[in-house]
Amino acid sequence: MYDSNELKQLLLDRALKFGDFTLASGKKAKYYCDGKQITLSSKGVRLVGEGMLKLMEEEDEFPKAVGGMSMGADPIVASIITMADVQDKELKGFLVRKEAKGHGTNKFIEGPVQPGDTVVIVEDVVTTGGSSLKAIERAEEFGLKVKTVIAILDRMEGGREAFEKAGYQLKSLFTIRDFGLEPPQD
Image (cartoon, rainbow, N blue to C red):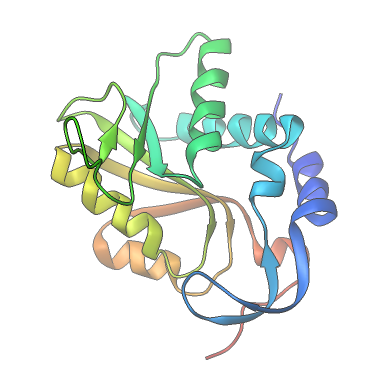
């Protein structure tokens, strides 16, 4: 069973770092959340999978698949589809390549999904939403119907607004405020 408090403690102990950082978005920050410290540990990834699956169950319609930008989403996707099977739920996974394969089918989307499938995009940490918006673009080009984006942590730095502007909803297991931090004021 999903234990939010246990995952929160793991994030505090292993993933949240303080100092001077440059994020993938190019923004400067006083803290960094290294999601791989959670998603590449057995307990952490299990908790993430259980938590995200729980959020997916709250949707009006349970999606056909879950996916995200490789490589950050890879362990998250694997965990969610594994936890779905443990709960006797049918769910496919897919990965979005940053670049098309240079051989074979030259596709951006990998996995057993079909055009028309309803899907959820997953991410470890959302700042501006750029990575997930790129994953959404590629998923929709393939013909998938994106319903929601789910993240472990929302830094509350514009990602939610970017998704809403594009017509998507962001759900997260935590926001930075859950850790007693405030998003920077621009």
